[in-house]
Image (cartoon, rainbow, N blue to C red; front, side):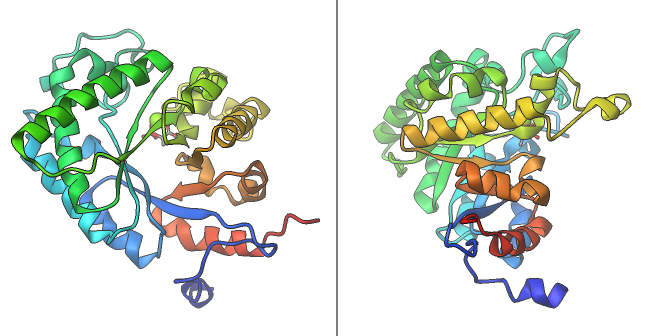
Length: 296
Ligand code: PEP
Ligand code: MG
């Protein structure tokens, strides 16, 4: 079994009838790249940047962030690395942010909402990301998007950051791909409009399920009601994939559901271009893809 999986390293993730998909991996720290390479993922589909901000007393500096992003980009040797900007709030808290207490944090000031409110923090991260873009194949993605206006506001801030960097003579890749997480029902439902603003979508099924079913993903007593295969969630995924392709952009899945082998064929049929899963799931998923055929 292990040997059989081992033999899939270096192979393409392609179905029996020739449909190819990219299998990427999710990481939470620069050290995780080793497991990504060992399991032969074709890229990193979600690099959660929260590790830089959590479990400490002060904001991470631009330099600290730059070193972390650069090391991952370099170690991935030209393979795509999709880095997600800060997603704290809700379950993940950092006291030094001094955010007001909220009665309903999952629906509160989290992720992009913090970044658009506290633009100094956001700019520091974007400067670090753009500087690192000179050292590998980096793409940047934004969490918890619900509107076109947010995406336009982000692009204005990016424009300012690029002008600053250019003025300083700092190297960066101005063609860096920009994407959004589709993890709210709002984003899925307006994905036709959002697709015109960005280079790619990555569907976050963990939050998409939470917000679609109105079930707190942290509450174990609701497990019985938490149906990961709920038709409403699968429908939002299908709509998102259709709108991505209609507008010529690629669409991946980076939530837990991407690793659910009972849905692999469904996702392939929807035309999902990339599945990003934890490193140990990469080769079993490739095996599943290679055993699938869709022409019958
Ligand atoms: C998701 O919501 O599916 C996701 C991938 O992001 P996170 O689990 O970090 O919220
Ligand atoms: Mg999420």
